[in-house]
Image 1 (cartoon, rainbow, N blue to C red):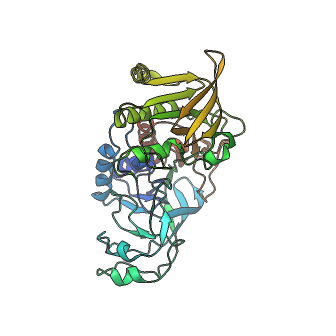
Image 2 (image 1 turned 90 degrees about the vertical axis):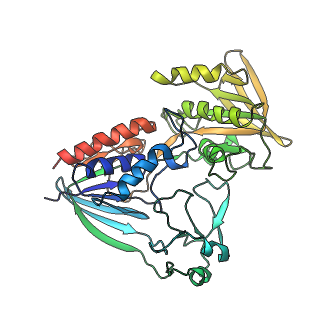
Length: 405
């Protein structure tokens, strides 16, 4: 009977499950498909309930990983296959080449000579990086990585690296491991806003998603924390937030993602703090701020420059160098046309389906609870929820993984 625990996914849920299990004396193998740990949380500017930067808590957890020799983590790694039963699972791991070894000191000399560029996925395409890049300023592990699709294989970075850390001949590695139980914490991705034809994403530069707004407001984002319109890098004086962008819609996501209303209210505070004279408009079907967050909703709504309009947005249209949001105003009974400079779409949480292994899912793509003993879903991989709930859920999943064998 194997005793090791496999955690699939290196976001806040996966990291929590890994450190909680390891600190009770179990060996943990943590795998993450990205070249860094931290998941969606490290892309945020602030998060609930304290509205503090995510590194307040993430830095502590990453230190717990770094100093605990019971945790072995593998980035750029996917799970290809899972077979066996509770207490004895055989798992096939596939690791993509990083092309940069642990010798890397992140000095940046390689970036200076790299001729190729790529869209920066961490910043949701709002800027670009060189083909060899550091994922973000506080990345863990703090090593550069090469985007193989963008790399010209010119060898300039190899010549520039005085530490011999770059190897362009690295290959994909596949290996099998045996574990006793598995925690699936594969997280989420924003719903593809380009699929919502009437809201203008991809058609108009100044229609962005809520995750893009997080990056614009973040100090380590593409604009160093200044909220600027992508089209002309000017401050938007009128900003519209469109709720349920694709959510609660049988043609897109049939469910509510639970946190989008709070995320938009939070981002309204970003705009009001960043641009004090800005007017904000939030178009909603229902405002859902359950339990302890009701006070936060009341506080934001009391701001005279915050306008909450109950009604579904019909379309977003170009109007000169600005935009018009066309929506039904249910409370007044008329159709409203609001001129704005920037539109932010509250796109719902969609489960990440990149896991290659045979894991059961429900009709919406979330990990099904009916996996059998030994495999446990955690966090947003199981259902939409906020960071605090995900941490609690991950602790429970770690306990189940320990007890199942």
